[in-house]
Length: 301
Length: 260
Image (cartoon, rainbow over all chains, first blue to last red; front, top):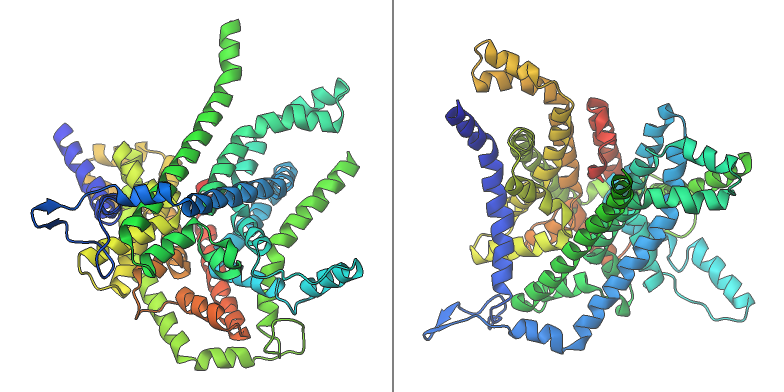
């Protein structure tokens, strides 16, 4: 029986493992190797073995750490991703709280309404902001009329950092709502009633009960927003100005325009490490937060 | 209390407006009788006529549908196997391989597959795009199938085995029919993800191959016309239909938070 079970196990898990090893794990490893190589004369990679020398070096890493412009762009990407996470949280919290408080039979519908826009094409959602923020659209004309009234010259809304940020928030909002809702839905309403009976104001009830209890959802949503936002290239590419290039844009440029694969790989690895670090941090903080109250209970018992 | 409720409704209403207004504007302007997406002039269907006469767009749509059909078929088979394996024979390696492609920024998978295909001298085109799409769709199918299995009574399969069914027959006649809603929902999701994918396609398509998202991208980079609105509206309609069918087949789809 154990033999048959082992056979069954390999028949079932073998094919997906094989496929993902070939089309995910191996390409990722090749990228790690490529980061230690020299760029080829006509793009790509220089030959691995030439004139008795193995082409493995740290030059592309040295370049990333010596040319500050790349560290600056990376830092800018982190700032954009953090701002995106913050604004997503501010918008998602009331949405998630409302859904968690509505009667059960409407919840699925309200939740579906949050997820549906996520399923429309990514580019269409970017394109929509091109229309809304366009120079001839009502929003830009109104804003500039108000600015003119204050004696300020007109500002472009499209092709600006503002456009990039608005769209980043727009695209990632559902990622924040879902984990927040999943958390808020589990809260025990009697806690809030007890707090009210003891005379806590609504402000106190939120900051001292709902918010601390919702932190695991905040961390999960934060990681789900921050990680994809950090690697984005299409939004700055379409809606940004010349100064809005983020790490994703530089990676795209290294692979498709400059064709410097080793340096592009270094940037990709830096991005991966940052994404993994954030995911790990979020998981660690969430676990610590969960652990503290129960371990206190244990200590008391 | 009623006053607080009102504030919450107002904030949430603003949230929903933020989510939907942009999409409504795209659809509305696809019927607008003006080249500029700036103000409403009058109703017309001429952008849809332009769209259906645009040969580049028709070719792109054909490519997208072909890739999505192949990618969803293969990833449904592999993803179902992965979901079953994750449920019955949990292993770190499998979970990592299945979930990591979903968790990392898409651009990373795009560029690593680009290097991979070019180094192997594999011509970039429809096939490389389909192979890439399968790789990221497997995870989504696996999650839906595993969620379905988790809600299933495992003793049914055991009973079939005790009655003498071979492992394959127990799967084919007991487990598979029970998880079928999850499998179908996963397939529809994979189809939608494939037809909508831009980032990974952008890196793995090469110069000569165009899909709908790539065509939309080059149109909005060069010149914006309401033809983009028309193709966007149709694409949204297709996605909406697929997702609604998927959530009807498997209502739990809405509740698994990993999906977004």
